[in-house]
Image (cartoon, rainbow, N blue to C red):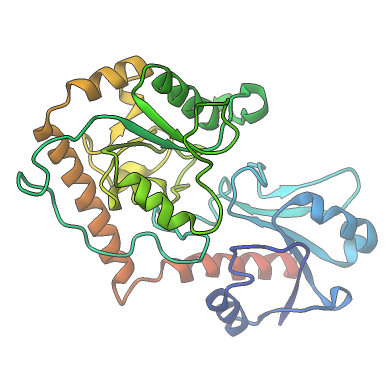
Length: 320
């Protein structure tokens, strides 16, 4: 038996969700409310473990489990500060959490890929109402602040997607929704209670959605591209350096990496025919439907595989 104490809220993680909680218990891993009684402290951020390391030292073990790519940015499976004990790491960069492109749930814990979609044809999509792009994102225009490099390669996409959205806004090609933008740019904050339904309503008024992830790494695929497809928008995505093409064929979504500049991207959209749009969108719909069928299959064990990684890591840490 291994006893875990949560060193922070661990929101939206298996450590507070009933399915994850129950799976861990079946494998002999339990959550305790008594920190002195635990074998392993778990947190999403290293800073929340340091006071406990100072208090308990090598008498306890320490683990960061973080599915948010900016809450922990270690690329190795341990981290160390001075003479404090090792902090073991499970994050999006160590390959211990996201094992495919389908772990996409909204803030209410509801699966994003939740239905089969119908293909487009001439009757359901005869032509464009307009070709304006929608961008739903926070304003992130400080390159130095958001930069995150691994082996010299930039993983941050926040700054790039902000620049594309701004250039598109200035040329009248992009409508922006989100917080923190310069006055007059954003049409609304587009966050808060009821956000999922509001986002759906917004997307349904557009045919293209600029939906880069905030960080570019393998299998870090959030609801962005899937929501875009579900609500009728052709995604504009960043497809180099991740695993998105394991599920999407070439020439489906618009891959910014094929263009390299916002000018070329927007010119391509301006010139796109309705036939090409339907063809690309139908490839995206096919990818969405395949993902849904995998998630709905009785043999689906994607979530359990992720949970099993926690079990294996905890057993290795406590047994070391």
